[in-house]
Image 1 (cartoon, rainbow, N blue to C red):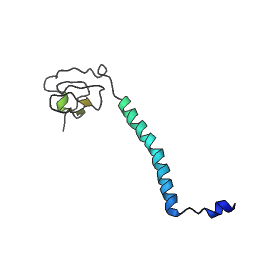
Image 2: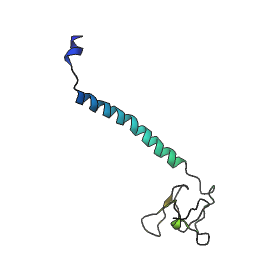
Image 3: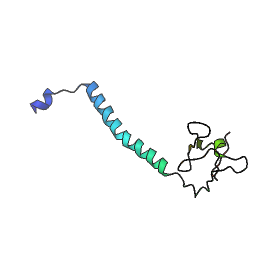
Image 4: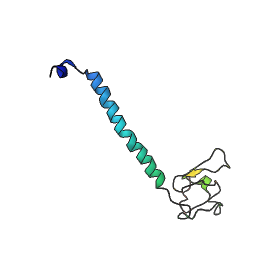
Length: 97
């Protein structure tokens, strides 16, 4: 028992250790959440994706579209998996406000 009493832990050390343990527990939850959201994307077939516009409706004007490195480069979509053409279209189309 003398060895337990002789090692006093400062409040600062205790709080640092508690914060470290809490952050270690949170990191896997964040990673799992990102993987789940990526896995939740629909297939191109399910969204009836096509590489050409439907009239004036095209991915570059859609709120779900995430542009590529330039205006003509393929980007990604928040809803549809895979590379998406800026001139493409699918049934998840939602015009930018």
